[in-house]
Image (cartoon, rainbow, N blue to C red; front, side):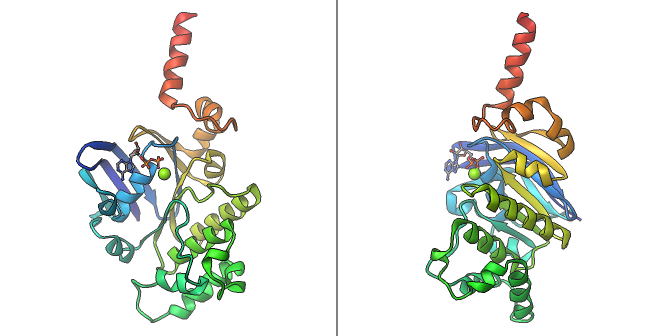
Length: 261
Ligand SMILES: Nc1ncnc2c1ncn2[C@@H]1O[C@H](COP(=O)(O)OP(=O)(O)O)[C@@H](O)[C@H]1O
Ligand SMILES: [Mg+2]
């Protein structure tokens, strides 16, 4: 069982070419990482997969998304969720005026009432902090708790695949560790994971496979183990300098340096 993207091209406002041919696949039993600097097209990829391009004035101009060898209808976000593909958007968009429990209930809206309590129980077991604060307004939760709520809300729809857009962004290292461990347990419980991250160290520490995106293209595609040991990835994504230069620039620069010396 696999969720896959085939040569996807996306244009915003009919002019801005944000994806120029991105391909990847997520086997259901795996964690797949997508790395890349700001503006590489990671969020666009997720929007294209989950039916959210419309509201951002974007559209798929080439390629498609498939779920177990059938084309996934990515025109409506609710349809994608109902097909078993859940997502946690960039910036943990929880409904701040709603309580924790109300947020979770929203996550189950594509599902029938049957089994609702089981779903709450499952999420509350996985995130005890959400259980403790079930009647608190989401806006009063810490950043880490809001991220957990965003993940919990996506799990309420019982997804077969979960796509996460930079879940570690802006969180303290301790919290990032917690989120990372939760992603691992969600995967172990049977959900395929697509993990978009700028935090390459975190993503590659748990991923089976990774892709690197640049300028709307998937420019690297390798087992996470290989990426962890790739010199360029090490230097420019794992170096901890915070600075992210283009991988292609790096390779180009190195070639030139070799050529000149
Ligand atoms: N709604 C939009 N309209 C026009 N251009 C956009 C829109 N959203 C993103 N872009 C552009 O598409 C490119 C990819 O952006 P994005 O997918 O957000 O990258 P990433 O998530 O990797 O930082 C960037 O050049 C960005 O400015
Ligand atoms: Mg993004």
